[in-house]
Length: 124
Image 1 (tube, one colour):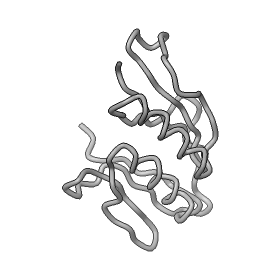
Image 2: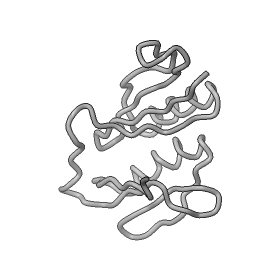
Image 3: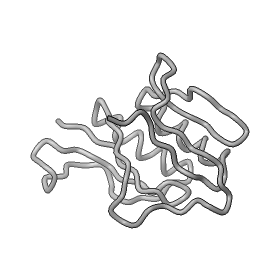
């Protein structure tokens, strides 16, 4: 399975603040910061997600590709969504049940500052 995934971003500071806010809610701390990259992971420091500064190369994939993060509670889904909006994300689906994905599916959807589609979800 995957070790980690990384995305190209146009503004490392802006994107780092965005992902600090949303991933911190889910319990994923920033595990490293460099001049051109930052990464988040688990409490043991294992990187799971990274961003890399590529000023003119941040091109999100076509519609349909997205990253989904697990939440532990519905409150976390709401907090993730609100923090994402506060730090430059755009609403791509308010928090709530998603019966079209299953009877227990609860999620919210954002577009990050570079246009990547992200989701936070849990099964209730």
